[in-house]
Each structure stands twice: as C-alpha cells, then as structure tokens.
Length: 388
Ligand SMILES: Cc1cc2nc3c(=O)[nH]c(=O)nc-3n(C[C@H](O)[C@H](O)[C@H](O)COP(=O)(O)O)c2cc1C
Image 1 (cartoon, rainbow, N blue to C red):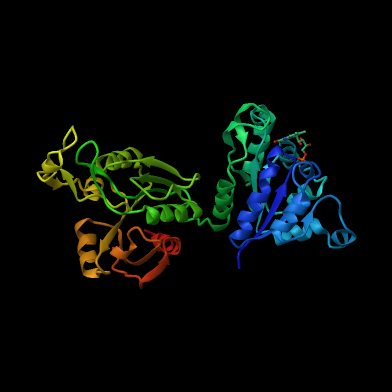
Image 2 (tube, rainbow, N blue to C red):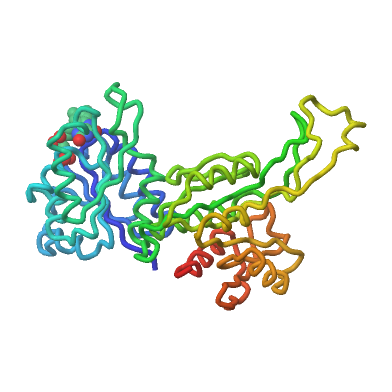
C-alpha cells in the first residue's frame, strides 16, 4: 500500500500546475488528499482536483461533518507527508509564527514537523526578502525543510529565483522524504552510465549499445534513499532526471577526469557505464577514406577502475556483462580489480528495458538471481549496496 500524501495548496500563481502533480502522485499509486486556502481557489478549482485525486477536496468552507470530525486533526493523522506547494510567502510566515487561522495552517499546527515539506514559489523580490529567509531558517531548525525554487522567467514578468520547480522534481523530493534511509544520507555517489565513444576519425566512433538506463535507474534509487548523487554519463538513450546532477563525458578519458575532479573522502562509485575496451592507435584528424578504415589499429583503453582504486581508497561497485551469468569470471574480476561488489548481468540486458542480475560482494555473499524491469532491479541493487 502506497503512502498518504496531503497536498496543501496556498495562493500562489503556480497553483495552476498542481493538478498535474496530483495526477502524477495518483498515477504512481499514492493516496492524495488536498487542502486549498481561500486564495488558492483563485488559481485552481476544487472540481479539477477532486476529479484527479479521486477524493473530496478540503477548504475553509467546512461542512458539519468536517466540524464533527475535527477535520484538521483527522487530516494531520491521515497524512504520511504534508506537502505545501506552492507555499506562499504568507503561509510560510504564518507557519513560522505559529498562526493557525485556516484549515491548512491548522493541519500543520497539529502535525509532526518531520512530515512537512514546503515548495516555496513567489516573485524574486519576495524570495529575496530577509523576513522570508528568517522564517525558512526558523522552520529548518525545527525540522521543516523546503525544496529550492527554480530560477527563470516568473509569471509576474520578472526573471530570477522563485519559480515552482517542475512537478517531476517536487514528486522526486517527496518520494525521497518518504523513502530516505539514514545509512545513505550524507553519502556521495558517483554513478557512471551509458556507453563511451572513442574517436576513429572526426565522424566515426567505437561505441556500444548501452542505453544508460541501468545506471540512471540506480542513480534515481540512490537519490530516493537520501544520497547525494552525481551521474557521469557517456552516450545514453534516456535522459538524466532534472533532480539529479550530471556531467557529460564522451570518452573514457574524460569520464575518468570528471570522476577524479569529484571524488572526495565520502564518495562511493558505481561503475555502470559500458566503457570501450579499446581506443584507436592511429586515430585520424581528417575523415578516413573507407579503404583506410581497414588499417585502423586498436590499443588497450585506460582502465578506469584500476586508475581510481590505485589513487583513492573509496568503495567501488563494478558491473560485468557476460554471455550468461558467469559467477566464476565475476569472482576473478572482483579480486583482480579489488572491487567491493560486482553486479553480473547477462548480455540480453544491453539496450533492453529489463535485466537479470546477481550480486557478488567482497564478503563472498552472492544474491539469488534478480530479474525484472531495470527500475525494479535497481531498487534491489541499491538495497544491497547498503553497508558497502
Ligand atoms: C495574481 C496574484 C498572484 C500571486 N502569486 C503569489 C505567489 O506566486 N507567491 C506568493 O507567495 N504570493 C502570491 N500572491 C500573494 C498571495 O496570494 C497573498 O499573499 C495571499 O494572502 C496568500 O494567501 P494564502 O497563503 O493563505 O494562500 C499573489 C497574489 C496575486 C493577486
């Protein structure tokens, strides 16, 4: 059973985006109830939200039943998380001052701070107002955190910080709030994804069919668990979600450079990228004539894992793509490369929606075969990465 999400919509212009967010939560199996402030009702209708959430929408027009049920207490107990989006300057100020003069702020007053997530959205001058900053600081100290607003063109015509983030970003932050795991919080992960491209000449490359899906799904699951995640990606068929930072690294050398620039004491590395085994020795500055192509010579590419493990004492989780799930080869690779764990997958996974894997840890533990969509497999992989 998925969690109960109470969305409080206050009277910011970005309230018009909220039907989309309600729909996104419902589509992903969450139970959604919504409280509208009187000012929010200027920007979004309760009927739209009622249809999309499949539930009654609450406002300050209370029915007799709402009063008998002490609806502010009932909603507060029902919610696993209370998301206020958009959170106006006014509503943030009221919460910070302990004012509970409408249904939304009364629900907040009756709720554990740990349940509350704010998504502020307002004009840039309101966002820069020191009173707002003081209020947010006070709320942060009490355990109420906010999702940073985005920068850009604002509804009022100004440009700057204060935009409501894309609904996909808000959704991911709420999921992270619900699923975070203390063990992952504060840990930094670098996840490589996709296939590298090694130049043959200015128009041709050596590459592979990696889609990057597995690496990106692992990065998403790590984000949901509360880790800081950086994706370093080669060529991928899928894009990195907006809530995850990433760096493009076309070839193996630039992938290694980007990794080295971002490794710190607290980093863990998941090497899900399909790195080319070879580079071209006689790479051409001008396009090869097709007959000349037959003369290309290959040499071994740099070994990212070896280079990193030689210099940095950070945990590294590798991947092995084999014809069949060959645990003997995996054991050899784990030892040779001094990996902390190795995820063995079958070649059928390349470019596919699904995957079949087993995980071998340096403790000698081997998981059963895990198969399914890359999203589901990534979820299991990340739960197995706990304590590595
Ligand atoms: C057209 C219009 C757009 C507004 N947009 C915002 C906004 O994006 N963010 C904000 O904090 N306040 C905004 N306000 C001001 C709030 O509506 C006002 O502070 C109101 O008291 C908020 O009430 P509530 O927090 O109870 O919903 C806007 C006002 C108007 C008239």
